[in-house]
Image (cartoon, rainbow, N blue to C red):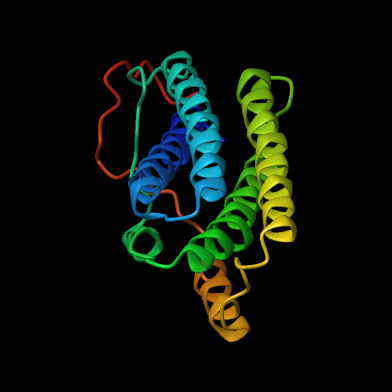
Length: 187
């Protein structure tokens, strides 16, 4: 990948971290279960840390500090639909069992396509995000075990969400004409 392509990937990852951080923040006051509010609150902080690290790294890749690039329109539409979920169980299952695994797959794809030595700072950030995502999912699973009122919504609905999420192979907009403010080459 070129420096610009790396910045585009990290900028898209940052957009998603910020979007889902804001989504969880909007869900907190409308979620009646205190334990779920606390879970969301802890994970808002995690997502904010990820967004900050990605934003700082973008500057090192010749992009503006906190460079943020929305994903392709079809994937952005999916994220909007997720943000509109109303019921606690749907929110918990779709975010932790569909959204986070989908993001993890894209993060692993980035790691497979970059040079671990030349892009070590990005690799370390993405690896941390993967570790945090796994912990976040484990915490959600523990909450579901302890609070049986949070039940799997219609299994076919979750499968449909997962299918929709997986159908977007490439979510990064490349060469969209958005000039990187500090572009100093394509290397």
